[in-house]
View 1: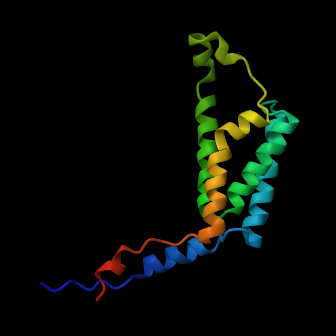
View 2: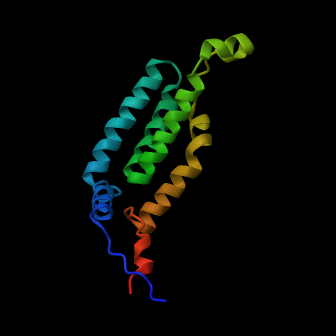
View 3: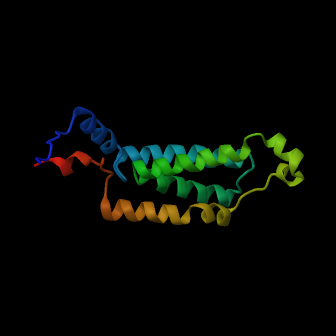
Length: 143
């Protein structure tokens, strides 16, 4: 049986272009990383959820995650969604567990405990493999 020939379509090329727009450590990713990490760290100090040292560590983690490119940005958004989920229905959680209402200020060790391995993997990938590339499963079917 002949193997069907499937040509890459416009959608795949567009996806590849969108991914290439945020290459690791390019000026665009550095600018986005600097601004987003600064906003998040300042917000953490203002809300008293991060100590100053914790905010500095969170800034470094956020900057490195986002500056690594698209994958790091997705990872950073995963952390943000986790933070939002923790705060969801906080009042209800307080009724079930009295300790849930006590806010604790996170320091550098708590920030790194949740992110050190992920940032190390993102850095490794950015340094040794470079920019993200879209997977093209159609390449296997070309003759």
